[in-house]
Length: 91
Image (cartoon, rainbow, N blue to C red; front, side, top):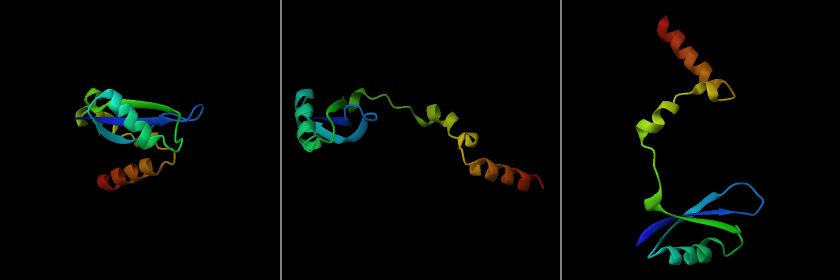
């Protein structure tokens, strides 16, 4: 058995969205199971089925450099809190 991730999209709207996961014996069965489980009520008319073994996952060391970028938040609260903490530690 393999685990597959299911992504759905409505034609002409938004992007593909993760709908869930399922276990199946092969690719063809995964496609049928996804149709029966996730598309029964026309939640989407485009489907991607991805075998979890084919996913490429970035580890913490790869993602880490982008974790501390408060200047990218539009409301400024994270930057203000960081500056306040620096001022308080300097005094």
